[in-house]
Amino acid sequence: MPTRPPAKRASKSAAPKLGALPEWNLDDLYSGIEGPDLKRDLDRCEEECVDFEKAYKGRLGELAAGTGGGSLLAAVKRYEGIEDLLGRLGSYAGLIYAGNTSDPARAKFYGDVQERITAASSHMLFFTLELNRIDDAVLEAALRDPALAYYRPWFEDVRKEKPYQLEDRVEQLFHEKSITAYSAWNRLYDETIAGLRFNVNGKSLAIEPTLSLLQDADGKKRKLAAQALAVTFKANIRQFTHITNTLAKAKEISDRWRGFVDVADARHLSNRVEREVVDALVASVRAAYPQLSHRYYALKAKWFGKKTLPHWDRNAPLPKVESRAIAWTEARETVLTAYGAFSPKMAAIADRFFTERWIDAPVRPGKQPGAFSHPTVPSAHPYVLLNYQGKTRDVMTLAHELGHGVHQVLAAPNGPLMAPTPLTLAETASVFGEMLTFKKLLAATKDRKARKAMLAAKVEDMINTVVRQIAFYTFERKVHTERRNGELTADKLCELWMSVQSESLGPAIELKEGYETFWTYIPHFIHSPFYVYAYAFGDCLVNSLYAVYEKSASGFAERYLEMLSAGGTKHHAELLKPFGLDARDPKFWDGGLGVVAKLIDELEALDNRH
Image (cartoon, rainbow, N blue to C red):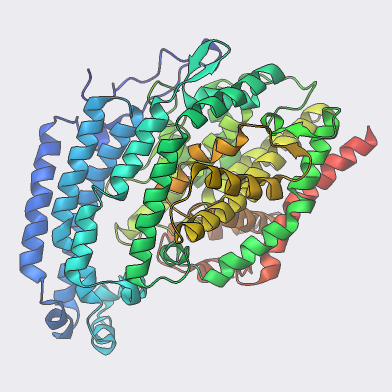
């Protein structure tokens, strides 16, 4: 059994029609799970965390009140260095595990590293807690030091947490118990999902290829896949119900102790976005359901010669439109050309992911489903995970994740404390990358049927990003609100799921038996409660940004890259101001949603011209 993913340049198991698919090289982080460099850093991080606590605990007020901010600056820089080290170790363990969550050796390694990081970082907890006990006037005086003032955005973010922080020993207890609390349940969920098998027409498939069949051109395969998903989800629903109940209760306990009023307030705080902004987004999207998803799915049903479509046909390719497998080299060229036409700098950064082996593309048994771009730490670089199967949506996923990757590379110079971007803005570059790629492909498509198929695919992606994610957010709100009154049965969870899905998808989508269990496979509900609205936020934001770009392209790319380079140093209002946009204005969301509506208008017009 290998101790780390093999450092191959390409997967030989990839289907020939796709070409050789790259596997990432994690040696840029560590040489292996038994490597001396890894052992050295694990030992070093424990020693440095203990030494840091001894050097600074109980002294921060004194340092801040000293001459200038130099003494406090030294502490912040040392803290930042340790955060980078902890992040590098955690990222490596997480990426190793994502490569094959079914491998017991990797699972043990991941768990062991998590435990050591948690134990070491418990010695760092005092730092932000103690910073928040410094008098505002004293801290403000220290921040007059230009070198310390560089970290002002970070200090301001730390201060926003002040009303919700607890006494030091309680914070330490929460921190140390995370290993046996939400982290353990997250891991159980991941391993359960990775271990599921779905019997599709006599073949035993993992979840990723089974979900992929829902986009197959063969309607029988779509139906069989949906039925197989339902059978397996139902067989495991007690476990998923228990995990969901436990994590929702754990969140309720944390929220209650910290003083959060609304079930999503903790997420809004971490996203640095006001509750009323999110509420306005949600209200705008839900009000637009009839003009977006309801209208589009009625149109799609007509294309299939029906009044309604079963849920397994929701993402089906259009009838009588040829689909083909897109080779990896073509996918790469498509995305890089689209990026390059917008900004050569953006394309150059994206190209490094290919040439320097920062991408893991093949579908493998046990590999984490879905896709992500992990920023790791500023002293290293991001890594992208895909499950590439040659579909048009896979090309869009590549464009999406590379958008994240470019954003993460550009933000890295801000350092470990200020490179991370709030989720609401973290989706901006990814969705913009998709839009660039889509527009390039659409401009090159002259055939009416092919153009219609492309427009339909883009509308579906936007509905999945905006409508579906707001429906997810609505479902989560219902789950976490109801959980405050006691445990939820599997039937209740299914009932809540069906209510929001029916509302969002509309009367043209028939939710057949078995669909009620499909909430079980959405990982965001488990890993990042209320994350999902960030997708809708990002999509509407990008629609508005792209409209500005189309009206006045001169100088836009430079302003856009400058926005990405800000990382977490600026609030969304400040970042959008150069583009004349304001997310606090309810009309802002209507403008973004109008872009989707116009694409549906174009599809209707194509039908009428037929």
